[in-house]
Image (cartoon, rainbow, N blue to C red; front, side, top):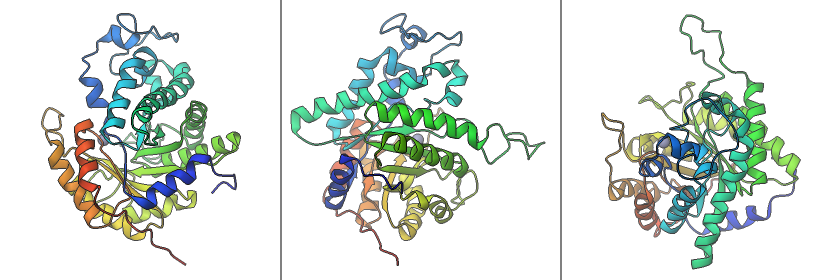
Length: 346
Ligand SMILES: [Zn+2]
């Protein structure tokens, strides 16, 4: 993809993926909610570490900020996922871009969030590996931001855009640079509802890799948001693949929005057309009326096992509502299946 030498981790990851289905971690949100943190915990003024970046905005709900203010708690969540069986653990940096942090007035914190976000996962994984000898990989999580480059948020002005490609590219470049500097092994562009945003992220990731001098594995994960099987920007899984395959991603896949069963046909479509590894991390079913996820670990695992039995997947994990127990159950359920064979096209 980049013409650069591949990072040392690349070969290890490719080798592991040929041998078995790899396990990705589960949701951060549910685990953070379980900590019951208030405003003072988020800013670090009550418990934790005071953030050196000032903001006048309330910070409760700014989960990424906890990397700086509650690093011990975040490290423990990553560690719990590693011990539950995750080979790949994501940084808590879904919203660590200047665009997403503008809601909290913390644009100036994004570099620290990404560097420290990768470091805290590395520490957690090194602890787990010291105990059991299993290698594990840090995936730098890059979210979609809260703006969309290809759709107008104003129904009366369809030509309007709240963000440009270049705004996104710059924000993502800063994020990817920080993640690589902090030691991320993989860059994971996830929850893609707008392919144009993802293209800006891909472009930025390649720029960051060029500056770093090494190609890192890139994981790309879209989100099907409605029953017709399209992303918010209107693409089918096949169209989505053809829009991003130039990046030669290590994995292409789907996450979030739907539970595993509803994701299955879209995953099958993607698996049929993509000449790279397939990654799936569904939600724990659909949220109830209170926005909570009721699906238990075994319920999710039975459905994800179906992906493995049908030979659709190479990497599996969980998105919203999943817990370390879900990941443990998923890892157990898929262990006996071979990973999907990547089709070779002329
Ligand atoms: Zn999700």
